[in-house]
Length: 540
Image (cartoon, rainbow, N blue to C red; front, top):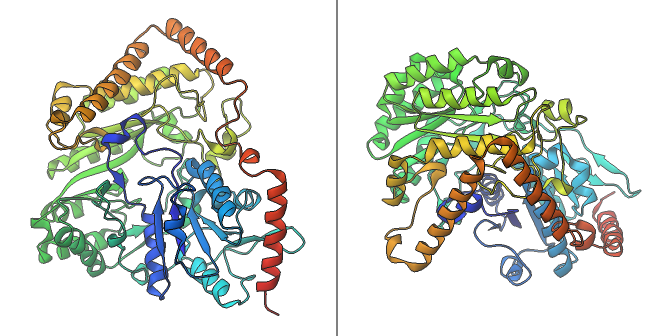
């Protein structure tokens, strides 16, 4: 089976050349689970090598038949996913394509209507294994839980949701050996799944509900040992949604890290909620060499925190920042601009707070009302939302790592704010936070900087790297200059540029126009072929 991590664009936008790529955890975890049961699995990552008709054979050749391809889909990757379906089917008409991930869990019918044979909704390990084994042995798959497919009569069926895996130790050690490309940053791991809170903007609840499950301390230690002692990692981020929700599990893990000697070889960072970083666990975290913590504060305005049902106050965050610093931890806060009812003054209040408390790192992203979330349901019929075909503009760094004059519209702009004002506030806040002499010097020295930017060793002796750096600096400075213009002038310039872009591209087919990628005739052939294949596979 081939598992694909699609990428609509390179991670990091105009910073992508200098930003290491994170390992695709979802694809890797599924690969490990399938391999545990003896199946031949390959992975392909669009971030590392763009999949096209010229290199597709090397991923497909030698795979077991029937040929099965699985694609993990985030909303920002939906367009690329449907493009890949067309590409793969054109060369391998007999292929069976399975989609999984948050986006198709929220919109399973969309995946089927755009060429997939099956959708695995929610947590994918168990239903994907059951489906793959049924396809390989010609057994009945029609009643597998969490499965969506098209029935013989053409109607799309969504089977009932399956149960979540109770014991995460059943999932094998992550297969780091499949992800050794030098572009990867291997300093990531996960030790738990889920977060039992109800923030209206969070799409992760579609996968885990309100549950919180975690791996045992010995199991996490085993995985950390591989990263530290085999792959030489000196810094590791726990990519958990809410690392410190359970006190005792954190204490047990920290004790194991100290006893194993890992805390002497590596430093660790976590993401969690401010109201879940308890003082009881702080001495243990400090002893285990946890040196950094990040909180998704989202806003410094209490009214807006209530709008998104954050369940935490500004005061809670400030107290927890002080607590973390008391135990020697560097603190990062992550902000979202463009929340419903938000004003320019609200955004500046959030920016000022990040300045006043002196953070290690922050990031100001634009709001994404992801399909399937409570927030999406609240704003989907308002004038502020804009959904491009196949969700191509649903990217949380649409302004943070792109030109202010990027033609993709922001997915949501609150009433009373213009797109230019919101883009301008996001860009100016990010630039003002990072464009400091200390940050610039650290980046030039090759240290890992904002947004994980890191220059290649001895880059100043390499003409290509000097050229790319010069180009990046020009983009940043020209955009910053535009962002510093008075709002009426900047608004006029932005409107004029967008009008010219629209005129120049008026006759051009959109990049991800699926009807152009898969014409109507081919779509009918696919549906007919899929029906006949499934009829043959279904047992009595």
